[in-house]
Image 1: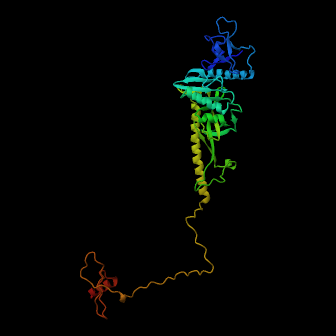
Image 2: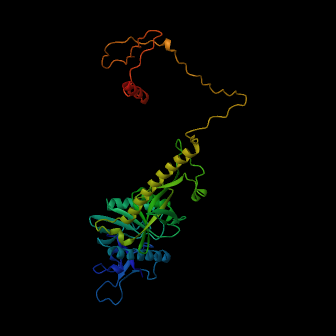
Length: 399
């Protein structure tokens, strides 16, 4: 007894849980085929009043000849059905149905059915494979989606298993002054094929989605007047300051060395209610890019400062003492002060006396006194005679 069948008329998967009312019962001219072995199936229990529950049965009555493959298909279907109900509950999603683009009964892709969701004016095709398909199957599915749903956003939700999740050591990033830990993976050939085609690869873990960005390792080039050797600081004792990394976003570039993963909630994918976008993850990537630019500038500036410190000679002091004298060098004698030479009076040439001196002219010396040799000039009488003279005058009057 099977819970699903391939509808050869409408080229899609039919699930019993979705309801089979109105479908023709029985063989229906070979319309229903087993998805595991390809045998025609019989629809039973679809009529009103049937005593058995609806199901698809093999004509042999012994079940599928490939039971392991049938069990795997049923498990894959369960994942798709649960995801469909989750997507339908997201805000902004107006419709979510099942689609199988490019599927053929004679050449199955190995993929479970995809989901076709509508969010605003955007159409999203959501894949949820439980196993890692081969690269050629991925390419076939991408071409089929472009052919049947041109312009739709193609999203792949993968599982966190070793085949789809080549986990590496966590990457520690610095955001808003805090250190955060991001999981890091090595992309597989299938994932690179999806990215190269413009698709989106996410990892789904319950209600959490991991969105990748590209990690590109590189060494800073040594520019003129830069020194990157033996930087001071504890962190540089274990790391080369030239060894750095940059990101590629919003999708990781195919040339990325690894992928870092930003965790966001599944419900945030339709927060704008008009588009299916991991906006929260894109905001983190923008912050990582801004931090990266600041880190580049700081390291290059520090390399220049280190070069200047190590290659600039020390500055001389403003005043330097005179160099020491040699022992053999004679010391100069101090100069001897000579007495000043004053000209004799006869050597002075006095200008002739003038009766009148013009204002502002040079100062004139007075004319020398006129007297005869040997005759002393008479002194002028004193205005205040002395005591002896007054006594002589009184004695003369008495006589």
